[in-house]
Image (cartoon, rainbow, N blue to C red; front, side):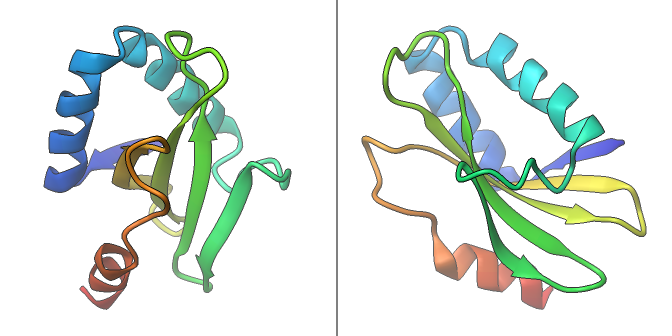
Length: 110
């Protein structure tokens, strides 16, 4: 499985990495899960925001060891034909209520 990080995602990751020290380990574990289950578990913590034959966009929780009861959110696209996951957005639920819909629309248009 190939993982691609968009520039905005990289900036958000770097900013949150300074606040939550366990993000690197937590994100590595998350990537291992995505390598096995790229379309998620179907549970309540894995939401499909867009679905077509070419691409599916998901929002999911990322468990962070540094945070006890809160979690981080990751928005990513899965491209089954390329066996690729593209990370679109990364945010802390306490800072932002929901995902950036405009960014997701812009990603889908490109």
